[in-house]
Every structure is written in structure tokens, then in C-alpha cells.
Image (cartoon, rainbow, N blue to C red; front, side, top):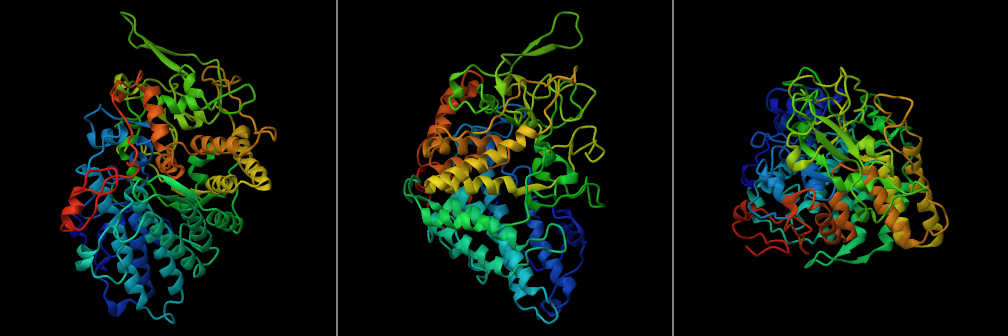
Length: 597
């Protein structure tokens, strides 16, 4: 799969109708070729912009596998971290992701080349749209500036993805002919320089966007500023270009993060954490930047669903779906939800026995195995059973039976699955056949809880007393939402909770910068588990090696394939794929931490 295959024409191809973007302005089924002569037709301009939005579907003529190179980063951001196992049939089933999980990644891994290719397809399509829109007559297309700004934000999203994944990446200017892409080096800019350029472009685009758009899903000023705040937060952790170590935390940039978030109004937390996975709330008060999906909308297959999650639906004994069973929560993540007598996180949870260990017994003559949970006396954060599906525990609103042995290979990966990003199996909004469990549920790139935690992180690292106290309030606000959510009930006795749920708020006593930093990083993990962000957080904080090696040590008794797994300093980014090096004719430079080409 080569970069040189990218030839994104200004065409309204039928492929656009199979992509992720839905809602009114994205439901065109355009036909034919767009020429420069008709770019002043507002419908034609909207088709071009729709093509840019469609890149979120990660489905292109030469790469129709978004489940392998997912928008959601379930493999790149969660399986590669301490939150998730690969799952599936075993170690050899998607060995490329197994190598991510065990930190044995190599430049010839095709899932790196595929992701690189998909992202640059998106960038190329955005660049083509920007060149075309630049020629439009604003008197005919009054929304010209806004449409250009929307496409710039989409392109910035893809560049941000590249930098987080690959560090050393080439920057393709909008006016650079695609035939000259081969001439662009990948070491022209450092990671920090890339992030600075992306943040600046987002803010420039924000100036040309309205605060609100008439059509749901269309990018507005608040979304662009929120994304700029996220990028600046990453940029503030300055890295040594040769070792990837964090060498400075830029407080000026952190203050800009705080100012940007303070200027973003009109959002709030949903009242119940579980509302995040209900379609009726998906474009609600917490949704800042979301990819719009739809189900049974008249397009091919199940509709414009989130094909990135195709492999990840449940399977196994008595499971209501017959999926592929990838992307499973780690035991370490489950253990991390334990709380103390005050309902606060146990920071040294890895010193404790595994929580909620599944035991299975099948006696001779019995049709089905009997299973139960042991070591469940500890207090746990209620988000444990909002995020993970555990045997004997109710799965959302499914009443036929509790979650059972719903994992494809329990010997390799244990018994726990995920609840995030899925509707309840009996929901009429969930696909009842293949693709199993697919729905129109949006994918949240940024939600309001993120902004609260980003601001808290910036304030903690700035470190003044007033800011630390404000950060405590912000973190507690996120925890309070979980505290007030409706807890999962015992399947057989709805008057009882399914576990000893206890979540408390951080008190003022003992709240110093070091403690606050631990609290923030823990909260980021518990609140956003399985959302594709965990590994990128670890790299931003400069703690990937420490966390991952502690994880492998803690988990090796459960997952024997972690024996010998080691995370090495300098490998915080993926290697530049060898296929892309070949495409460049030897111009690309390999990332630090890997052998030179």
C-alpha cells in the first residue's frame, strides 16, 4: 500500500455515499464530475466540502478497511496502552495489533502503512477541496469563508493524528501538486513545530467560522477553538527531538489552553455517564466535536455506521451478537476502578489482588457452565460497569440474561468485554445482523468532560495555588457526574447495586501539585477509558515507559503472552513505515528509537 496511490480528484464519487458523515448536509448522493467551471454552484461546493467530511469514514477506493486502520484509534491508542487487550481469536489473529499490544512493533507492520495511507488520503482530499473552494465567487457562495475554514479544521485533525502517531511526518502544503509529494522530506519540522502550526491554523480557521451552524455536525468556531486547546496542551509538553523525553512544560502555552477553554461557552456534562452511549443524547450538551454516523439510511449495508468498530462487537457463549470479539478491557483497567473507604482512587492498585476474578465450573451432565466473580468486596467507581461488560453483571438494559462468557477466546483474553460505544443488544436502533451491533451512534472526538480535564491539567502544571484549587473543582465536577449517575443494579435483585459502588470527591486537605497530578491522570484514564486516547496521554506526560513496564509486570500472570514484553525508551511513536520510506526514494528519516533505514 503506497502513498503514491493517492489521486483524489475533485469528483463526486459514489464512494462518498458509503462514508461516515450523515445528517442533512451530508446525505447527498452526488454523481458525475465537478469541474472548475461549476464550482460556483453552491450545491457543487457543498459536495466538495462533504467529501472532506467523508474522510472521517476512512474508506477510500484503495483502502476500504477502516476496522483495520480505525478512526477511533482502538488499536493505536488503547490496545497499545494499558487499557485493553487485542482480543479476537488469539495472538496470531491480527498479529499486527498483537505486536502493538506487546510493544514489538516494526516498520514493516502493514497496519502502520495503512493508517499512514488513510490519513494522507484524508489530507489530500482536504487539500483538493481547499484549492477548488479558493476559486469560488463569494457573491455566489456567501458561506465560502466558513466552508474553507471547516475543511481546514478537518485537515488539521488529520495532521494532528499523524504527529501523535508517527512524529516525523511530511507536511503537504495545499498548493503542492501531488506529483511532488515524493519530494517532501519527513524531517523538515519537529513534533513541536508541527503542533504549533496545527494550533495556529485551527485558530485562523476559527476566525472565519460562526459560533453555531444551522446544520448538525458542521464545524463551528467553538469546535475549532476546542481542538486548538487540545493541540496546545500537547505542544506545551516540549520533547527532546532525539529521545522523545519531555524536557520542559511551557506554562505560557498552558495559560493559552486555559484562556481558550474559558472562552468556549454553551456546553455541559450530560447528567448520567451512560447517556454518552445513547443516540438521543449524542448531539447533546456534552458533544463538542463529533463524527456523525447513521443507521439504515438507505446507503449500502447497514448505513453510514462506524465501520472502525466492525471487529469489536461481542461474541461467545449465549452472546446476543455474533461478532469478532476484539478490543477487550484489561484486568489492569478493571483493577484501576477500585476506590478506598472515601471513594477515592487507589493509586497503588497494582499492589492489590485482581478485582472481580471470573471463576468457571462445568460439571458433568450440565448443559452450561456455572460462573461467578471472586474478590468483589472492594469499593469500586461506578464507571467500572458503565465502561466494561463483566460476567454476571447486567449489560445495559438487556434483560434476557446477564453478561456471560461473551469473549471469543477466554483462555487468551479473560472474560470481560466493553460497554462503551454500543447500544443495548435489544435496542431497535442496533443492527441485529452483520455488522453486529452497528448503529448510528456518533464518535466523540472532543466532549465537554475532555475540556474540563484539559483545563484542570493545564492549571495543575502551571502550579499556582488558585489554579490548583480550581483544578480540584473541575475534576470533582467530572467525578460528581459519575457519582450521581444511575448505578448498575444486581440482575436478580434490582433493589441492590451490582457491586460496592463508592465514588467520592477530592477534599481540599492534602491537595498539592504532586497529588493533583496523580488525581488528574487517574481521572483522565477512568473517565475516558477505551476512547482511543490513553497511549497518547502517556506519551504527552512522558511516562509511557514507566506505566507500560509496570503494566506488563502486573499483567503477566493473567496474560502469558506478556512474558518478555518490554517498552523501550524512544519508542513513544510508531516507526515510519518501510513502504513510505520506499515511496520517498530514501528521503524519509526513521524515528528515534528504531534502526535507521
